[in-house]
Structure formats: C-alpha cells, structure tokens
Length: 194
Image 1: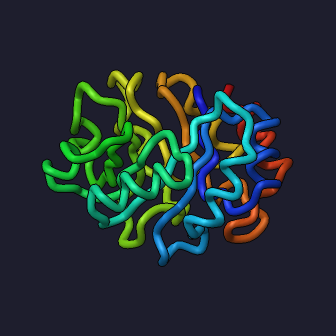
Image 2: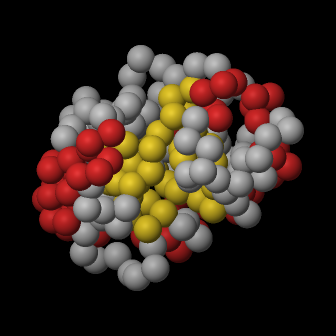
C-alpha cells in the first residue's frame, strides 16, 4: 500500500517521512487544525524537498480560487478536499485533486465509484481526530481506488493489507505530540504498510 504522512509542519518531519519511504506528504491549510501551516511555512518546506514525492494540500470549505492559488504558490502537486464541494468547484480546479469521503455508513464508501478517493471516519472535526472507521464495511469490496484514513497507526495498519487498499493516510497515529511526528513511528508505519 502507498503511504501518505499527513499534517507535516516541519522540514525535519518531511525528510524523516521521505527517507522512511513515504509516497506523499500532507500539508493542512485549515486554520482550526493543530497541524495548520501557513502558505509561507509550507512553501519553505516544499521548495527544499527532493523530487518524486507527492505534496498534498488539504483544504476545508474554501473556493476553487483559494485552492488553485495556494497549490501554485506552495508547490503542492495534489489538492485534498475535506468537504462536500459544489460541482462547479471541481470544474474550476486547475490542479489534480482527490475527494474525501467522511463515511457515516457502509454505503458512503461506494461514492465516486470510478475515482480514487480518500475514505475517513466521520467526525464533527475535519481530519486528524484519530477515529477509526468500521473496517468490516470494506469486506468483499473493490478497494483498489481507496486510500484509507482515520485512527491508523503502526500496529493496526498491518491488518489492512488483505483488503487491497490503494493506500493509507496517517497523521495523529505517528505523532509524539500534535503536529510533531515521531520518526520511529513513521518508519514503523511505512514498513508495516508496505
């Protein structure tokens, strides 16, 4: 499974994740998150990163112009939309994007059947709450276009291999404190997911 380490707030954390084998890094542009980074902070990190790593910008309840300009300014390669955007927003995006399903029931995971999507457990807050989704929902389902998030860590990610997910996304499960990654947890998570 491919791995994304989300909630990157420092260059050191970014490089630890890359050196451990992360396929993607997530940068949170949502001010209410403890992992929030400013455009200037994200740009300073991203411009020093090596090539061939996906730089994902996470957004909540913003317009297409904000997404486009932020991604362009910081050098993000993918936008992750943590909200149910209006159809016109998707049409106006000038950057590749991925939709997030905040699943409350099994039928939610069937949304967007022909697209890659990130599936997270529903909670009032947006992202990084560490809440686990009901894994039984994914049995006997084609999960090859799903990136699973929510409540993952280096101990429980191993059990997900049999479901055939495209990838996994972790934030709080590999931290020593909010917004600060634990290098060993990151390394173990990526090792156990691959």
